Length: 190
Image (cartoon, rainbow, N blue to C red):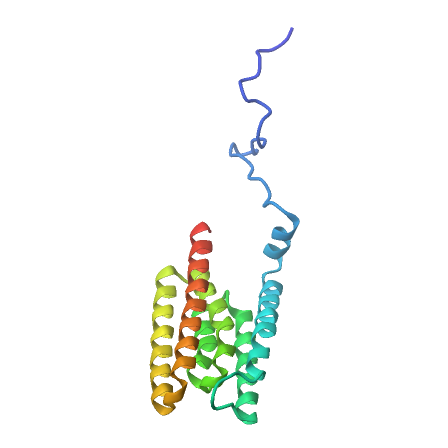
């Protein structure tokens, strides 16, 4: 004799767990599981990519009316390397990493400012994902305010550079905004 018919939908979905709950499926994809198991390796990859994108702009001469000296260029490369190394710790200390990444925004000479846009954008992404949305907006406001003050001081010191400085300010603020909004979107989905 046969038993009662199975309920509708039986055999579909994950099997019940021994304790009565449902088993959750494994995260999709081999790559996502790999990155979930190796977060520090992912952070090193991000830091290397940030360096590869930032170092050329720290060394290539721009159209800025007052070109940087060799010492300023070496200092810029050292700051970029330090900021990229800080990115390795973006998950555990996102606010400190952002502070280290944003420091070159107000230290480097104006001719080297484009070198500083990628790393803070990646760091503010980490603030949004690993700290909080509120901390992300505060960091964005503080960094943008510092960039405005820096631009004003540099522009008053060298009036012929206003156009370059404004362009650099806008591109830096847009890079930070893109990093912040992307981080907020990813952080909200977590």
